[in-house]
Length: 315
Image 1 (tube, rainbow, N blue to C red):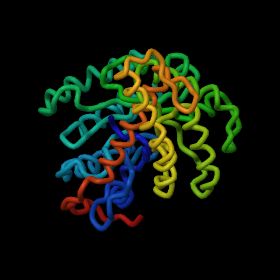
Image 2: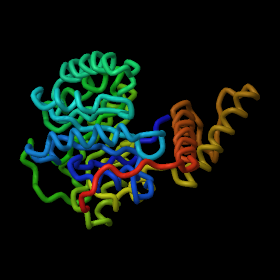
Image 3: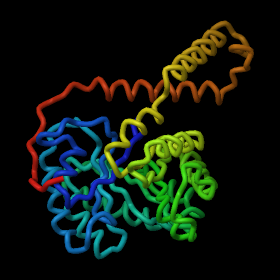
């Protein structure tokens, strides 16, 4: 099981921000699960080439699997995406975030493009994962088809800010965000139906940590498995809320143990604390334990010698 709790967008033309996200140079690796090196909205047009070169350089430095997974958000338009992929499709890249996806065909086309580029780069075909981003009403209606459009797709990402703009929703978002509940739920349902992860959108107010916590709690209750972010100060809160709590792990262990004991004894029905343990409850408990073990392994990963920094811009 992959750990996709916290996914941070990092402008690729800002070397110090990239170093901090990846734990390069003077920076100690953080608990971030995925660094999304951004070539799209976070990078001005006249900085795109510089950002591409920076990503190529930092991927070349990767000497281990330590630190967060390295994804790149490419530009949607073909004129931008081609140069993006030419620069970043190389060993060290874990995946691509495809923004503003409206149709499954867009993902299928991108997947075929990746096939050819992986072959040319000597990378195992299919090793680069895809996370399509749902950011419009049209994309939401196509979300299930998008999620199942390629075996490369590992998750759907909800782009809340662009989605709200597409529907002319209020620009100021409160943590309850009732106007987004339907869309967030629809993304989760589409992702889960295709057996993919569902990643919630960012909390835009970087200084409002109480709002972040409320928003993340709601996201998890809706079924999201992780959350995107734009500030390192949000990592710990998101990781905490999208990891199984000690109480959840304890209960999951009791559920699995009781069910397996009942199966061994030939009981047709098994109960725990007066509640019948049907198959969905047991499967959920097993997923909880798998995630707990995956998070624990990530936390136990021993540090290794880290590569040097690749840039010198002030944060």
